[in-house]
Every structure is written in C-alpha cells, then in structure tokens.
Length: 204
Image: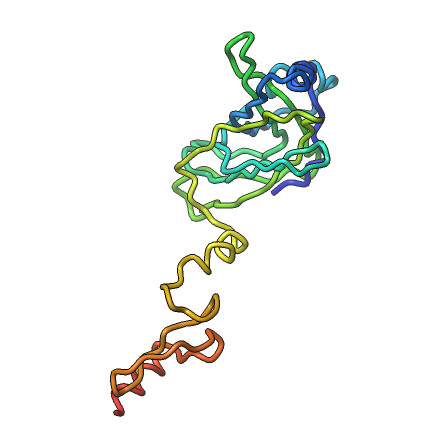
C-alpha cells in the first residue's frame, strides 16, 4: 500500500463533524481510491480528483482520543484497468442533503503503488486501517459491507477460544486420538501432525 500522510478534513467534513458534536449521527459510507494529481486545495474538494474504484468498510472503532479507526479491505476485483493509487478519500453521509460527501482526503505523492486489473497474475487482498478525526462525537457509525470476509491474524486469534468444543481445558488445546480409540486434550504445540497421527494409528 502507498505511504499516505495523515488525512485532512475537507470543508464538508468539518461541517459534518460540527453537526456530530451536537448529536447528529456521523455515518461513514465508503472509501474511494483515485489516480489524480495532488490538488492545490484539499479542503475545497468535493470528491476525488480522479476516482478509480470504491471500497467497502469492514469495521469501525472509536479509539477514544477523538479519532476513529476504520478498517478497509483492498481488492482488485472489479478493477478493469490498473492504476496508481495516488489519492484516498473517506466518504460520509450528509442527511441534510441526502448524499455522500468527501469527509477526509490524503494523497500519496511519489509513493503511489500500482493496483493491477483483475484477471491477471496478481490477486490483491489487503486490509488497512484509516485513522480520522471525529472529535467528541458519540454517535459515529459506518455502513459495513457484509461481503468483506478477509480476516487478520488478530481476528482469528480473538475468535479461536470460541471455536473450541465444550470441555477443552485451555484455548488452543487440541483433541488427540489414540490407537485404542481413546482421546485426550493436549496443548497445540504438543499435538501430533496429521501424518504422525495416521502413522501412529496405522502402527497400532
């Protein structure tokens, strides 16, 4: 992923943030990627200079320091023509006008990465986090794309204890079968591999 500097609120973004401070919902809707040149005035932008594709939001968390962490999944599915990812914009819904507006923007400059078109030898699947200002707003949400199914290692580690059957002594334990048909719980690090387990049973 390109090395983007911190995101800058647009004029429309500041207006939405001000509304959120007095109780109006601040709802992020999507992230746009573009290939446009760096604009002279970021705050005046109403959209990306040259938007190429739009990404759904996977999750959102309020960090607690006046910022939010928005997780996005970057894939090249649907990209018909490859392009350099130079600009990135976060969009939010403005209920007063009934449309999405550009909330915050950043430009990668000379560090832009190339996103290849789908159908080629390179399949792109990458998650990244956006940190953006939400101030003291309490009612911050996002339109979550339910079709985004990529999980990070941290996601799987958090879920792992819930996947264990009832009776497992500790998170991460595995149920190992013996040659006599008995079973016992063993730490994952001490469990036999599938090949070793089959060899043990075959030799019984």
